[in-house]
Image 1 (cartoon, one colour):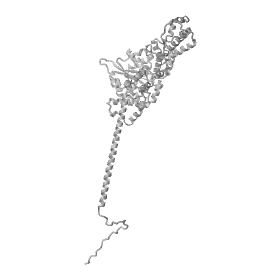
Image 2 (spheres, helix red, strand yellow; image 1 turned 90 degrees about the horizontal axis):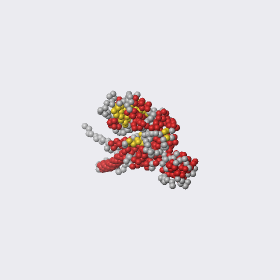
Image 3 (cartoon, one colour; image 1 turned 90 degrees about the vertical axis):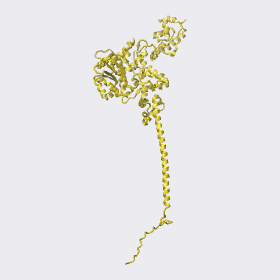
Image 4 (cartoon, helix red, strand yellow; image 1 turned 30 degrees about the vertical axis):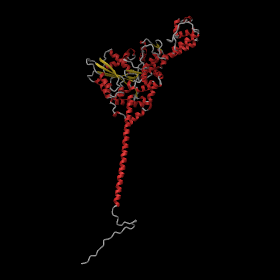
Length: 567
């Protein structure tokens, strides 16, 4: 009697589907025992049983031995095995609990030093410059790896205290987005009282100074105190290259960056090879030579391609079978140019229509449209997303799990700006909504100001500004507003309507008063005319009055000459 097998669900995946088909083939062959099948094969009974267990895809020779022992067609089943392998390669897996050797779109952190390769020369150059300058800038295009270089390269190197590096009492990392950046930075730059060493403030994503920081001047003034002769503050910033012109417009910042700027350029082919192979080797994995060569070639040709390469490698790792990462898995993940879009679209297709709308609203809120520069990501507080909503919370969790977003405490952010250009659907949303997004960014800030000022009516929108915002967020577009933003816009509309009603009421009163005054004036005038006419009627009649018209007026009389008596 054959051993009892655990039932399988053929819809659970390609492995289970193939195992279920193998069992059906065995049943059609009369249900031979595995011991009997082993007598017709070079494989043991336990190996043949494992082939149809559904726990893993069997090797091709084992699968074909099972088929031949049951009288099946070798060519047909070889094609079925290959189809199952292709389907399995397309299906990512995270079920073994292993830590991935690649970070995907997420930048490397200080804890990822053992995964960070290919930047040794650049790290040494920056550390050396920091020993000679108190204010240093890393400048590079989006996707050049500035954040990872700072966090996983330079900061760990400083902890090792190489010769010539500054001695530091504390290292603190921040980004400049937010309304209370200056107060936060003031706390970060506080030097421990008992220490004689410096404090290093690392400002990542420095371009947010120009897009998200209302206290820009105060924040810059604070950072530039590092240049004072007796300062114990040191500063390192990482800024996107397309914002370098904005930095040059600030005289103090321009002076600070002179002779203190390191350009973070593209990695060489040898450096890229290290970044591909060594993390996998540390995890006990092998990257096929052909795959390594292909990734290096494609990344060299892709400007800002490091996060795309990292994400493609992560998705390839998730599709691994055994220890090898192969071209087949890489292609199933979508490659350099398609892995991000593949991940995003796979997630998007699994959402309900309502959830898809919520995902769109979340993702658009995380964008600041460029003004003469590329679009930038916009870190956002969870409260602004109305994350208390169960649907919003569920969609947010899925976006984070797919590594498209990061969640750090209450701060939600894109995993990388590469998502903006690498996901065509997202790019189309942004282009369609560009003008509304600009209005929305201003509305968000103004609504926050209104709330912070205890809903002061003087801070509400009026006139054309209110009309533009009300028009932009009418109908379905209103769903994009958070609760405070909707309340702010409603308050402005209510104030406008109240003023309109007051104006209309005043106009009606003025009309009534005008009519009343007109009536009074008419009555008074009529009375005056009547009195005048009555006055004429009661006076003496004319001397030469005629009953008819006077055709010949009387001649004037000459004075009568009276003859006086003579003497």
